[in-house]
Length: 194
Image 1: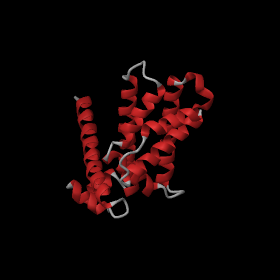
Image 2: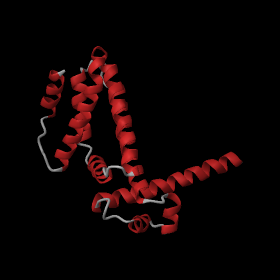
Image 3: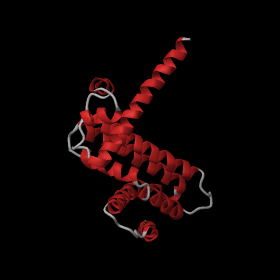
C-alpha cells in the first residue's frame, strides 16, 4: 500500500510541475522571459504564489526546466527517427531530414531559441546549466556522427560543433521569417567541406 501512495504522490508532483511548465511556456512564448513574472505564471497555472514557490523558488529554474524539457523532447524525437530511419540512407540524407525537422518544429524551436537567448547571461546559474545541457546535446550529435560516419571519427567532434552552429543559425533565420532555406545545399556544403 505504501508503494502505491508513493507512486501517486510522485505522479501528482510531476503533474503539477508539468502544469506549471506548460502555463509558463505559453506565457514566455507570448511575453518573453523578462516580461513574465512568477505571479503571472501562478495566475496562468491557476495556483497560488505559495504553491508555485513550493515547486519553483526562482523563475530561472522554471526557464531551465522548460528549455530542458524541450531539448529532451526534440532529442528523443530525433534519436527515435534516426534509429528507425532507412539503414540505406546516406549521412547527408539523414542530416537533411534532421535539419528540416528541427527548423520546422515551430513553437518548440522559437521557444527554445528565446529561452536560450534570455538565459545567455554569462556567469548566471542558468547559463551554467544550459552550457552543461548544450554540451550533452553536442556530445549526442557526435555519438550519432560516430555511428553513421565511423570512417570520419577524427573530424566528428568539429563536425558536431558545426552542425549545432548551423542548426542554431537556421532556427534564428526561420524565427525571423526566412521562407526558403536551402537545407539541401547547406548539408551538401557541410559534407563537401570534410
